[in-house]
Length: 107
Ligand code: 5GP
Figure 1 (cartoon, helix red, strand yellow):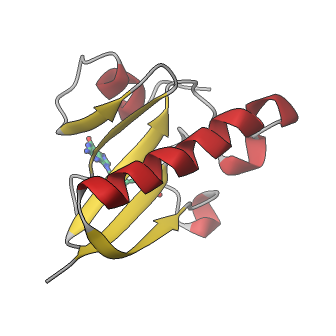
Figure 2 (figure 1 turned 120 degrees about the vertical axis):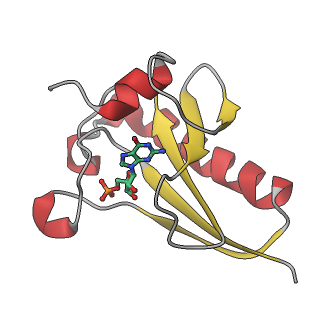
């Protein structure tokens, strides 16, 4: 898999507004937000797409969902959405697996 901007952000070689980091993931604000809160949850393991996830990665996928719950609480979201674009036809632009966390906070 070729290097993406997300690998550089994970290594802190490119700037990003990082809001969460643990041993498996990093989460940072999307540069072009599509919702009041738009955060990308990115595994540190450079898996290109959701279609490339294997059985051994399932704990990581589960962990990403836990991170999403944590973000929803931290940002007091009344509603939120997790989106994964898969492949060019699916709207994927960056080929390093990422979940879009789109949140709408309480008014
Ligand atoms: P995709 O279309 O691959 O599902 O989503 C890629 C997302 O990455 C887009 O929403 C885009 O705005 C975001 N993005 C692209 N380049 C950068 C960057 O350099 N920094 C940040 N924070 N987000 C980026």
